Image 1: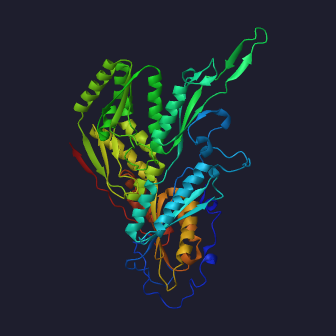
Image 2 (image 1 turned 135 degrees about the vertical axis):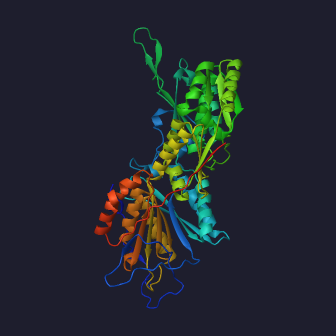
Image 3 (image 1 turned 180 degrees about the vertical axis):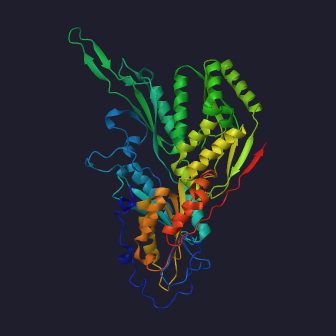
Amino acid sequence: MNAMNKIANMRNWSERMSPAFGMSSRPNLAMSMQGLHPHHKITPQGTSPIAPPQIGDAIIHHAFNVPFASDLAGPDTEDILHATADAVLRWTHPAEAPDDVPVYDLPVHAENLGRLRKTCKDITNSSLPVEAHVISTTPKHLKGQVTTVCLSGSHDLVWQTREKILNETPLSLRCTTVDIDGEMVADLNAGSLKQAVTDTIDSISAFCGVDIFLLGPKLTPLVDGVNGDVELRRDQRWRVAIYGDILSSEHAKTRVLVSIDQWLGRIVDMMHLDFTLQQLICGRNRKNIKLIESATGTAIYFPPPYSRYFRYCPRNAQPRNPDEIIITGDKPRHIELAKLKLGDLLNRVRLYVKDVPMPPEKVDTILLTRLDKVRKIVEANGSYIQFPPLGSRQTPVRIQATENLHIERTVRELMSLAGQFYSGFWASQPDGRRLPEDNDIRLMLGDICANSDAEISFQRLSFTIDGSDDAVKAALHVISQIRFVTQSQYTIRVKIELANEHKEFVSGKKNGKINKIMGQSTDPGFSINPLALKHKLT
């Protein structure tokens, strides 16, 4: 969708600013702008270029969208055979609700939004000099609801508050399903569910902090008109639907699969293995584990490779130990043999390590929006990517593998993924006008975030934008429609990262492409800088 559609709901900010804004005739000597190296200058003819002003201590305003997945709908009530405590109340609309009620009005989404508002209110009312506000909007170009958090305070406090919010909020809610045989969970002759099955589902729900539904066909009695016999018509496909955040739902899914093995009479055992070595032992596309499972007749359940990226855990729930591996088998000796084979693989591991620099903004965006891609990369290469925890703003990213070739492939694919995200800067020259009021700034940043899906910082007439290529372009387009920003001279800079082999293609023969762009634009600037990588063998 193009940028014009994304800003269809954008307000005219010049009409909504405080009456005194822009009316001051004296320069505000305390106001300065964050200095930027100009890459694109728009300068009236006959005037001198913009000089980068000095940076001083000032309040920073930062806005980001919270990925609640508020468009996730609950199951069809007609398919529900069993639900855990309060799951139906949380994931279905009340009976008196109208037919056209939106999905984001489900009680579970309203509850998550209410908790976020309370968290931000507590932060604002605390003794720390930082404010947090929540803005919920429904942009016309989206079907769902967009929730934006706006923070105001010193630089360090804003980032610490952002980290706190991201790690105390259930992000990226999802539904994970497990297919199951109907005869395993129900007594088809009696037309009822097995008590042991429902008790197990309830205990998994409470232990992992998720909502679970047992979905399947209605057991409809059919009477034979000749003999008077009664039989039950049933569908072959029954499902266990698990609703929760990304880690809790994966934890519950594993426990459901292990429970199915137990119902089949298999034995369950566990072993501990360093989490950072698990993907290396699995091998490319889990080749090593598939061979062990085939040779020993066991099933081996590893934690997801992103278990240490997130720190959120539902209230009263128990997170899965990322170093714990679950093994099920028909006989104890099969499980012991699987353990021995895993130990042999561990002893033969030769570890290669490479550190890759990556901006914290890109790390968080990848963790929030491209986690499925990361999982495919590590499974395809038999490698492990050690991202910093979400919101920690730590760097670099560490990559481990058993061969240098696998590391290089992982780095190439990861950096290609990171290259989809840009950083944009828009800095206006101070001209003596007063800054907007804090509330006006929050509303402005909230609208930019909601209509572009980018993350925005604002400090002294300077915008910093991070997000996907489309998000950054849409945000810059939205900013260009704000009158008070474009009334003075401004500088725009966009930073992108490409693979080294693309340098010659981008530059063109004898820098022909760059020279052509510079000839068609207004005094742009280009800078191509290499990234340094650290590589070692252990």
